[in-house]
Length: 224
Image 1 (spheres, rainbow, N blue to C red):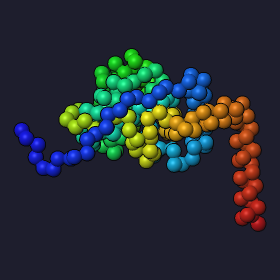
Image 2 (cartoon, rainbow, N blue to C red):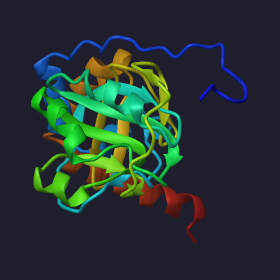
Image 3 (tube, helix red, strand yellow):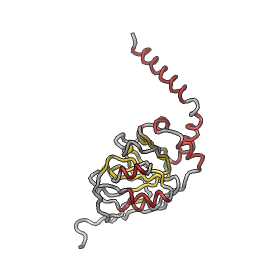
Image 4 (tube, one colour):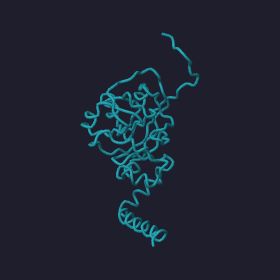
């Protein structure tokens, strides 16, 4: 059947995967939680709280972003992103919040996991959630759907995307857990990792002092 309607003249981009991060840098993120990372990057790099683990038992994730921009309702590009998995990578899928179908299922993940994929974040839905959780694979998204949609439009792979209201570029660092997902731009990855590593031993004392100072400042400004 010939294509009906308008035909786009802008061809989708399908690019190579980003370079991995050094192990010592990635280790700093694996030892940190999303709250600590969000405190360093701020609200512009913290995803919509509607995106979270799709099963209570799913472990945290931390890794280097491989990005996918897929047309809502078509998941062909997701498979292109999964094919680029490398050790320490996290697939980030821009699906514009589409939850009437799934971006993929358990079987779609298996080859990528074998190649080192360490997590997936989708601004949309996934399926086979219980089976994925049984593998202790961190899968984050907006919801679940059993429906597997069409695979017709190429979409884009390894380009800047929007996921949970945050611009994510290939090579950025993604950290997620039960509290949410935070993103560190690649250009700041080393700087943030150094701060996280340096503050880990003193974090509790620092937080307690900060809480006390915030309370004192409120009383000074508004107290009787």
